[in-house]
Image (cartoon, rainbow over all chains, first blue to last red; front, top):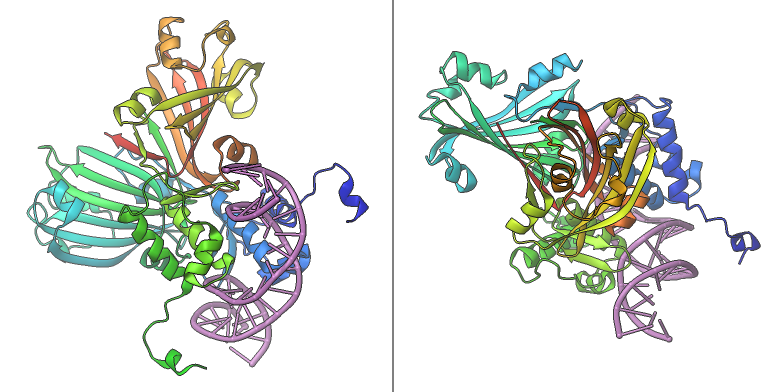
Length: 239
Length: 239
DNA sequence: TAGTGGTCTAGACCACGAA
DNA sequence: TCGTGGTCTAGACCACTAC
């Protein structure tokens, strides 16, 4: 309709314009990790388009890991990723500290229960502890750990201090040394209960890691399922 | 307004209803891998809500990896994932065949160029081949490979057959044996050019793998960047 | 309590794909 | 050519957060 649109320069869509604008602000450090973005309605005015368009662009930035959102609180610039090596014995606390993060752990639940499904297939024993922990970096929840440990190998585990290093506890109190591990890693999206714990929106992309850990006798003594915020982790593997 | 809404049973939102419905159809194999979902407008009528609501739910199913979309073609049920082990020497063709896929490779480009950025930092040599390949499983593009190889180590590489196993070529023609590898894995979203090659929408979640590969003298001879559709791969790691 | 994000309605026009 | 998905407008009401 408008003669301007007949020129063959590609039309830049409002969402693209906004994407580029915010991306630039973040990469130039005008907006720093942890900063809150302007509200959706402010962005709406700033870029002259509707909220749906704004949200499309924000969701795309979030998919790339540049920003994330907390439900009903707003959109924030993503902090740097924690670098993990799944082939080494994992040490969340150690890795986090050595990379300049302040880690913390919250015990969500510890139950004695009957193993089912994959946990039973792997452990070959029904009597397990099911421990659920939430781990944070600089106060931001980034990881849900759901661990299944053999009651036989770790008696009275529920009486121990569970919001610290479990690897240390296994070694020092139970004289159990993990000498082998298998990890299965894939991409997924968070269910409601996971999203709630991690303080993000259901459907947020996540990395799921399923681990089986073996003791010196090569027996599977632990089976874990972890959910990481997809923008909070980078895996390093050597061979 | 309506007295029914005053009851304290939780209100099930239209998007949730649709999510559950489609999820069930897929898990029960009513819809099989590769099948196309009904059009957005059909779903709109079926669930009695607007297209935006429908698309919200579809996007969430796609984030979980259950479905994916091809631009302007529709939404499809995701095929099973390819299981890869990044610590073994990678063999896309071998892994794919042994898991019942029909793999194929398309050479996108092969350029002699000057290495920059990360590629130069790693290889410590400007003269490289930059090879870009697209790899498919059962005809579905799942992986973009962007490989940087030292011209010094692989003279006349551009004259070779590049749409087959490069590992074989390196070993048989150049007598170069890869004996070590580092991989850095993270989650991201696809840019426009990547999305176009992979025949998906820009912004689709992806797994990015950066590899450095070493020869017997422990020299970095290859530096790759790979983009996988996030729903097409599962990584297995042992230690 | 004011403003935020979460969710939704009811449309519209366009470019592209399949036929 | 017709129907599809891609993108967008212009609102609305709600639950929750921050103050």
